[in-house]
Length: 434
Ligand code: HEM
Image (cartoon, rainbow, N blue to C red; front, side):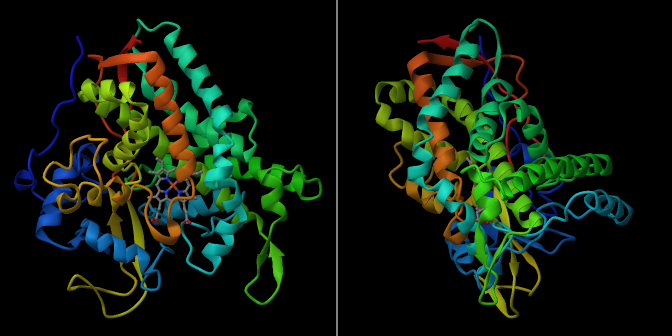
C-alpha cells in the first residue's frame, strides 16, 4: 500500500504566523510556503523581510506591472544568494582569480545589454528550433523509461532516475557537451545554484566556487577551440557572434560574458525542469483519476503540464532592484537600491486569479495562460519551449506505458532548503504498467 504526503505547516492562512518569518532561513517556508504567502497576500502588498532590504510581493495583480516596468525595477541584482562573509568572500575571490570573474548578462542585466546578450543565443531557443529536438528528446525519454520499466516491481526513485537526467541531457545536447561529461555537468549545475534562496555553509560556498571555476575552464577551452575553427554549433556561434559595443561599433563577447550566458542556460534549466517532473508525479499521484483522464484524452497533456508548472512554480521568485526615489507599490514606499522579490509561486496560487481552490491540480482550468511560472516581459524564460517540450514528451510516453503509481513508504516528501528553487529531494514510486 502506498502513502500520501502529509500536510506540512499551517492548514490555512489564518494559522500561518508571518510575523518575523524569513523565507531564506526558515525551513518551514522551504517545505511548504503556500499558506504563509496567502496570509501575506491577504494582509499586505509588501512583506518586508526583517533585517534585510528585501520586500516580498505576492499578489498577481502587483507582480505583472512590476516586471513590465523595467525602468523602475532593474534585474541587475547581482547574485540571488545571501552574500558571503568577509573572509569567505576573500577566499571566493581568490578561487575566481584562477578562472574568470562572474559578470551580469541575460537574467541579471537590463536593456540594452540584456537584449544584446539574449539575441546571441535566442535563435537556439525559438519554439520552432526547439521542436526540431523532439525526436532526440523522445529517444532519451524512451531510453530512461526502458531502464526504469525493465524492472517495475522495485521502488523507483523518480528524481534521480528520470527527473534529473532528462533536463541535463537536453541542455547538454544544445550546448554540444559530450555525454561522457554528464555527471560533471549536473555537479556544476548544483554548484551554481547552491546559494540561491537559501543559506549555505562556508565550506559549501567554497566547494561550489571551485566547481564553477572547473566548469569555466571546461567551456573556455571549447570556446577557444571554436574561435578559429567554427563547427556550426552553439559554442561556435556564441564565440563568433558580434554584438553592438554601445559606441557605434561591433565586438565579439568577452570570455566572462560567454561563461555567464552558458552558466545561466545550464542552471536555469536543470533544477527547475527536474523539480517540475517530480511535482507533476506528486500531483497526479495524489489523485490518480486525473491521470486516468489524461490517458484517455491526450489533448489534456499540454494543459496538465501548464497546471503542474503553475502549482510547482519551481523558480519561485526573482529579485528586482528599485532604481528611483519616490517609488510606491500599491501605496507602500520602497527606497532606491532596495530589493523587491516578485514571488511567482505566490501569484500562481493567488485566489483572486485562481478562484477559491487555487491549490487543486486541475488541468481544465480556463485561465492557465495567466500563470507566471516562466515570468513575464523581457526576461520571460528563454528555455520555456524546451522545458514544455521535455515535460510534454515525458508525460505522453508515460501515458502510453504507465497506468498508475503509488508513493512508497520510504518517502519523507522533504524539499530542498531553498524557497526560490523549490523541489522534492526524492520521490519513491511503485509503478503499475499499462
Ligand atoms: C520548468 C522549467 C523552467 C522554469 C519554471 C523557468 C522559470 C524562469 C523564470 C520565472 C524566469 C524569469 C526570471 C525573471 O523574471 O527575472 C526565467 C528566465 C530564464 N530562464 Fe527559465 N525556467 C525553466 C526552464 C529553463 C530552461 C530549460 C532554460 C535553458 C534552456 C532556462 C533558461 C532561462 C534563462 C537564460 C532566463 C533569463 C532570461 C532573460 O533574462 O532574458 N529556463 N526562467
